[in-house]
Length: 472
Image (cartoon, rainbow, N blue to C red; front, side):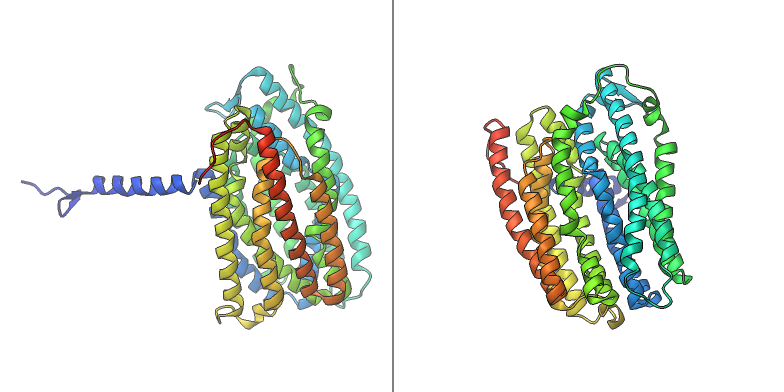
């Protein structure tokens, strides 16, 4: 009898592969590892892998003062939240409720209920007008603010003016395109968007590294943003051109009523956005102004590493936002709770392990070269920032759940905590440096986590009918 070439010791290859596929499929389901999550986790993992390369290049190719400018550029570019006014989050959540009645056909055109299509189109036309004005205002204001801020001290040999102006201009163009990515995510195109973001990591970091290596200095972030702009143009104008075709004509049916359906959520998000700068983006400017560009660079490097961990851990939850919205639209609250709890537990566990690993890697091993370790804050401030990131992850999981209902019940605590964070970072950071800023940040995040948990419990009870106790 001829030997079966598809077997080893009597075990057919096909049977082995099927058994292994079944095992991995079961594990993937338990860990909520659908395609969108795998792609986003791949993007976050790739970002984590490229962070060390970027940090080494920053330490090698930029002076300590230039590193301070590099990270403070990013903090001042965050001024766009003052014109964006929380619309991005509202777009995703509002679109997901309409997409419950729509889908894409085989060639990428939107099909489904005509009224839902009309409302999606009206939303897209609204956000184009909004962001066209917002991006222009941002570009004009940001150039003036940055020029005034950086001109207060003189740093010999640092030609920051040209890079700053072009960086703001490109960031304004990117701001104009970003809401359409949010619209696609709300329309459950999460897997494609995450594949796009995975490629974006290669393009953006490739441009950044090339300019660093060639001695481009502060022109490197300009090249990175230019790469992002080019890829966004490809996504919106080529990859999804059929999706956006209906948006070039006025909707013929029902429309999204901004004042009645979006503004009740958006104004709460906007109010928080106006003070969120104090909580998330004030660290580098405070360090730059009171302690110089070198300390600002150390703060920026540390926060970038911490935020990288947060991006990875948030992947499990953020990719489920469209499904959360669809569950809510169909009043499938037990399914919503089960999915949210599983993904939140995994997310919090991921950032806890990541924070512990990062701290030991930096301060208890010799793997990281001293030239790079010196560009971070010390062991104490870094440990405080990492510990705060774990509590922040808890609060973010709670916030995602609440906002999926197109509600914003955390307005008052959000504003209160952001103002408190800004005052603590400014007051303690200006006097005690990075250690004071880190301690103030941790204090307000712990208080916020407890506050948000109480609000989550109250709102879930009020919004849902009585249902079974959820379990992971």
